[in-house]
Image (cartoon, rainbow, N blue to C red):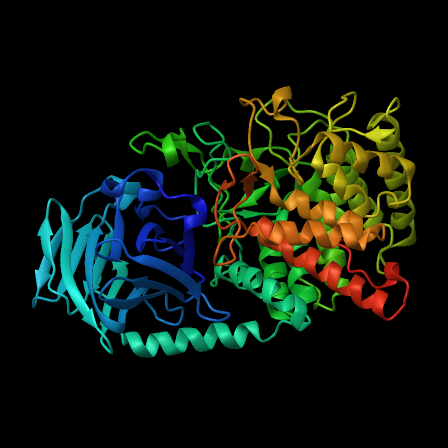
Length: 603
């Protein structure tokens, strides 16, 4: 039986990441990049598809935590005979990618076991394993090479590397697994204790930049550290999650590969880093964005690889059973080639946020804006697949049109463009605004709807007041929020849309989308309902697992996480909502007008 998604924690080195289960099994690791093929794929299959287990024998009591504001995971096993700690981390400063695992004796003595199952190419390719000098094992298959170094005596059994050992109080037993290309020399031995100190120092120093007040910083920092760990250091691109094909519906087909960089995340992420004081990260992300979107606006994609790659072809792995039988297991993402008009608004807004936040201008930012707007001037009238990347027919989604308005609205307020351009952009913004208010509203209910001519609701409509499309006091906005509260909420959480409508071309059913619930809290802040916003925020924050991580969704019925993990969109939403609340509460204490103090998402 697979572990629950919330039973996992992530370790990473800002190049790739691994998921460590509560029992000490690393069940997912893609190397050398986030989007590379996995050599441990038990998460989407079983132990035969690759994993690395180090655990206490018997039935230990298990607790775990991150070491301070770092990505160093500590799992403590308590047995009848003693207590031992497993320290897991990935050193970011090393030239080779490695996973370091140190078993530390705390009390008495504890009997431990180790099982290493390496299966390259998403759990299918069995490597040749060679042993040298009794303590080093080398696994090779095609271009891949892994080297395990440990003082523990291990042996081969049934295509696995296994061993048992005992750790006593005061002992420290290291295991270092390093990756390298098979045509080069094996990665050299690593000073595990030195790497631990260096890794702890890096994360501790990095997290000190956060300028949130102490009351809010504990929740914010864990999310910021997670976002940093999901960033590919060589280029600055941030992946949406560390995993692929974790289901949004157990046993269903809603399984997608999220190990890529979405343009839509740009504004949310940039604002989170800016408002928390991480200007370097915000600037790095801005420059990544400007590089990958260079070229013709008609060829703009919704997502890219971590280095800006465009080919993200979607294919199915038929040898993996899927997480709890959820098939198909998809690698790659066909949504990269969809038309999603809202990303043009996201891009325009990210440029505005960057300028307001004091970031230095990115190269050719003005030229890029004009090219995008020239394309969008015609494209905004087209139907698209929308923010939720539906696999059904394209539609005129209200949120998409509103975000097209954002693009022209922000441009019309530029201080550097020619007055004629400003006038034209303002006229187009007004035209789109009128179009949305005429066709995107259900006149009978006086609320906005998912798409033109529809009566369905959509949580993306919560963004309309947040981007400044209409003020929170507008009767249509108030009614839209009321309708979402009435028809899209379950157990206090917001669903994305009504999946039973078939709008997405998939069978109905999924969990509550955590980012959407944070957006509702932002709307409460914007309208001055701080008590309601705080209650909802606390409810959402409590859904994090024991080490502070969120998946994409949460199932209120089964009381478990769903979707890819950890999910950047969820963590970005938490940071922005926490900062909004922090400033709103501070403003109230100082008896200043809240609207001038609240850090809204975008406007």
